[in-house]
Amino acid sequence: MSVDGEAVRLRTGTEEDEPGWEVDPEDEWGMAVLATVGRQLRLRREAVGMRVTDFAAAVKYGDDLVYKIEGGKRIPRQEYLSKADKVLGAGGLIAAAWEDVRKVRYPKKIRDMARVEAQAVELTAYGTHNLHGLLQTEGYMRALFEMRRPAHSMDQVERLVGARLVRKAIFERDPSPELCFVQEEATLRRPLGGRMVLRRQLEHLLELGQMRNVEIQVMPIDCAVHAGMGGEIQVLKFADGTAVGRAEGDFGSRPVTELKHLRIMELRCGIIRAQALSPGESLAFIEQVLGET
Image (cartoon, rainbow, N blue to C red; front, top):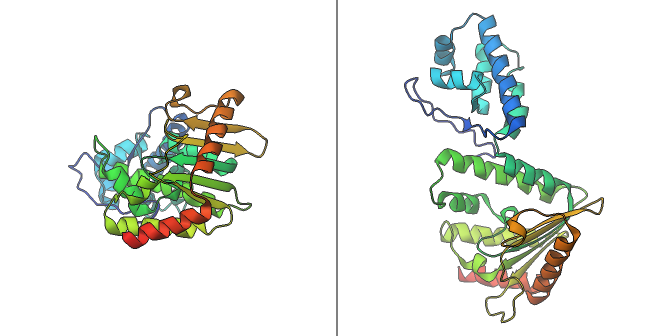
């Protein structure tokens, strides 16, 4: 499956749940993009004299989806825009709208996270229940999202996996940000998705751990004194000297920028890193777990 999650199951016009993504009503920018794209699609269709039913038949999607997309109520997939471009003879203008739509298809909260990570020059994160999103393989992500309760629809799973994969571009940035992850030993042993998914995940951690700007540390289960018992922590620092952090259970579990709160998080992160295995010891430990898996 590609990052864009473009595999589409065609349906008849009688089905209501057509392929596409739901719109977040609180995403004002996303709503504006979809309204513009939908309007352009409708105007183009009307300009060539096609009724909705004729257009729907030509692109092999249902009437209901066409109405929703033209009304800005549904996020079209890339295949829909490509087919519409050909049917309406738009010469690539409609297909080009995918560059804007592709950003909207991810939930606003995830887009905001990706934007913040893209600006960070330093990231320190401590994870407890599962591996940090930036460390996860696609198989591991998919397993996590599929086991959520209440259950996500498969469409939601594809959307969330795609969004998380896009965030991994942080490893390709130049200049490279400094990235430090401390993970509980349990997150390396829990076979989310099955044994083969875990093996590939451990191999991926070893690959990332070889990067010069990435440090992965393991907090062993037998550590008797542990500064991270309060839960997950993440601190991101930026080139202008500002920072943002979030600590599970503290400060309302919300992102904070206040210096006094950030100092607490940084102090805790520093102690956690000192208590964990060193990066070298951690990679050796991950290799050992891989051999046992």
